[in-house]
Image (cartoon, rainbow, N blue to C red):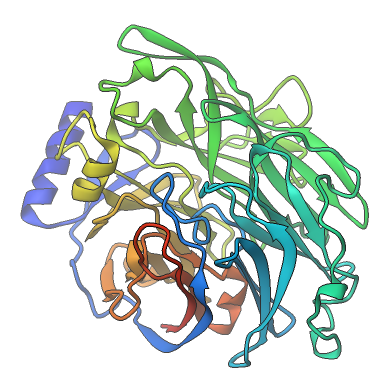
Length: 479
């Protein structure tokens, strides 16, 4: 069946149709779908505003510290205002706001300077609805976090509060005295009960675990929910440690917490070539009790946060799209939800029709990388479609859905491809080619503004060396 699948994949690439995979490891079903269809929704550019004419610029890990795909969120909207965060040329963290839809940006420069030229050390914003505070987590890569929170009510009643530094508390190395230790990838999310949660990794690449903390006026840790241990074998080599990299962690409208992810192995000897990337498989688990317990795709209980039973590489039923370590699968892309509460995920890698052994992950992802749209259907099966637009980049893409469940993927450089729900999300069409943006690679999006039918992209313009460059927000009408 695997050989047949590869044959069908090559054939569909030659004749120009899209291949749809159904289920997890159940084989291919090939459907004919047009490469460009009038059914795919359009996008209309509404405007573009300048945040900073000289934002901090350096390239590390092939990315920028101000635009990292795993930031959740670098731009966020709440109660009629939009908030954005970045590091300016003097390395200080800046938080800005504007009244939507077109107010002027107001800026506050926090008393914290980025500690190192590392693109992991990005800024994430969160809002705690119960007390109307803005929370800021920043400048951390396997190190203690820098954390700031605003006064109560600042984002709940923005029109009545001036935007000044005195509205924010001191920069802390803990969460109000709660020690998180050395962490990476800070993310905020809000529960159905309007509590704020914080997701983070402890440990390092190839040997790390995912953890959760929760805020209801007071912070407390919930503990680990993923495991770094267990065997993964390839080519007669066994890797015994790894870490789980999230594509997304968030709540759907029904109140379910969904986690989609990939694994990275600690022992790179499992690779066919040392120039590859030891990521493999797309995994999925969900929680119906705010991340306390976890179930696999079939609904079986498989893990309990803070216990000895965690989501691990050997957890049954969690792999929904199998892929070996040899295809340059990237970590930390994107996840969204349709109106039925089912998750959609975008992943990217080098398809086997180009090579079965990635030996230079940056060069070959740039030359041959493709994005894929995965979605869970009402029966719990997973369907997969290749998006027929080359990445032409090493970096990652962002996925959002509109109110009608049409899908929009923002590729590197701010290019936007779309697909309609009516087509079963198969009619992928390039609707904006990034013209005029001059964006460097990855962009980040404001998911909380989608209810207005507007997609806001935070992007930084390409520069060279360490020459500062403009950082901007582009707004698009969806559909």
